[in-house]
Length: 531
Image (cartoon, rainbow, N blue to C red; front, side, top):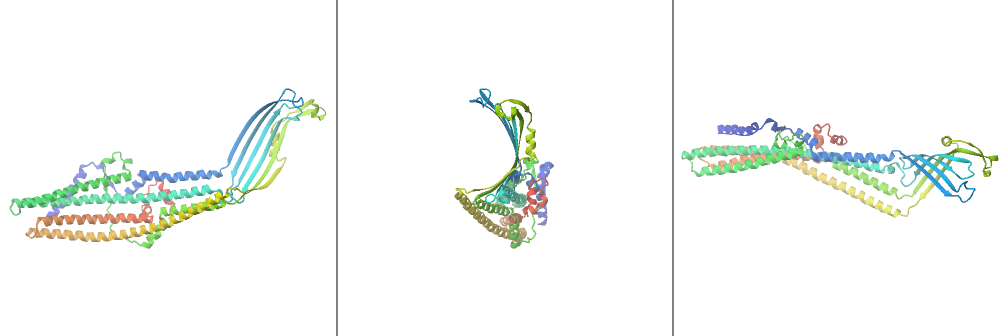
């Protein structure tokens, strides 16, 4: 009996080794679980698309911050007016011509308190053909400082930075969303990896079972030829061999399906253009160590670490802020304004006889340019200032009250969603902990079942030697052993998948694989910002 088992093992080893040797060495990818996770986080196209979300949110935040970048504005205009002259006093000719050039430059800054501060320089030139001008052409310049500050509505550091705060919250929620997506892909990578391990082991068990059935068939043929067994025993063994061959075909298809799923998950095509010809060979074995699982600790970690829960809390903060902003918009618009300006003027002075412009007799001119007007403005030669208060009571405040009601409802909705999510997490953690514990106990039970099935088969084979059993029972016990082995393998894989599910439910899946994160993976930023 032991000699037969040894022969079976050698034959099975040959069956499992020959295909691998037949394939080219470069067509086999030996892959550990850590490498599988690393390739998933680095190459997966779905995750690559999600990685862009925080970048988009970061760009939106940068755009919101532009509100406090100073604004510089320039303007220039030229106007040439000509009108009929209705009096000889107006102009010497039949028409009055006036040429005006004006320019303006302004530097304005939005203040964190909600106000605004601006500095402007305005100037111009006027040249006319009108009579009795004492300065022509004339240059003017005005340096002005304006300050405006809301005291009720739109007042405050947070109110003025509303778009920035909301954009930052959106950025944080997006980063938590990326962490959640990465948690999901870590779980998928583990699940797909262990699924491939299981399907390969299942195929191995099916091949072993086929070898045992084939050996029994050959033994039956020899005994039928010797006349010690009826011919029908050959038919029974042949039927069982055919059934097990069909099982192998199904198991081989399952292996290929698992390989294709894993190849897609790790995006093997990105590293190997001939990915369809590559066979993946897992190098890690599933763990069967006893879990140290505490429901209270698992719940605590989930409430602290779950990125989706953190994102919901951030959105709740945005809803609370929106309510505060809506309430602020109900206030009257009371605004303090202040101005300080300094004008300057210069130009070509026209000298009249006896200093009387009405005489119309020009006796000379004193030329001057626009630089003097500019100097007077910047020297504050003529100081002017004003301070004022303005109050605006919009009749449409009723709509603002509707906005407050809407913000209140949105806040209540956000709170309910948070409470519901916490309940769902509680249920998910309890289920995940229970599955880990149950699957570990299943391993122990199926291990005993497999050991007993092996002992029953061995005992039945000994009975067959002395004529106390039949081929029917041998085949049945062989199938029982194969089923027990597959059940044990499945329970081990289920246990490891349930562990991965527990880590995902706790928000620890990414933390457990910190070493798997590629250095150039943008998702590392999201991971670093997690609590």
